[in-house]
Image (cartoon, rainbow, N blue to C red; front, side, top):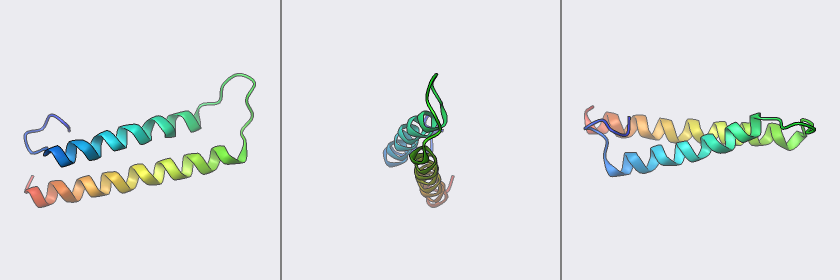
Length: 68
């Protein structure tokens, strides 16, 4: 998406934020050897996935307004 001709610098910034949130999401989902599924892990999965959804909804709106 970031290389599409309709992608503005603002959209690129939002996509970068979604990528950053993905790192947190992936980290929250990944149990390392010897780790237990702590309650805060679920909260981190929830928060990061909601952040990704929010950013991508914003990006969708930006593309719509751009006429893409």
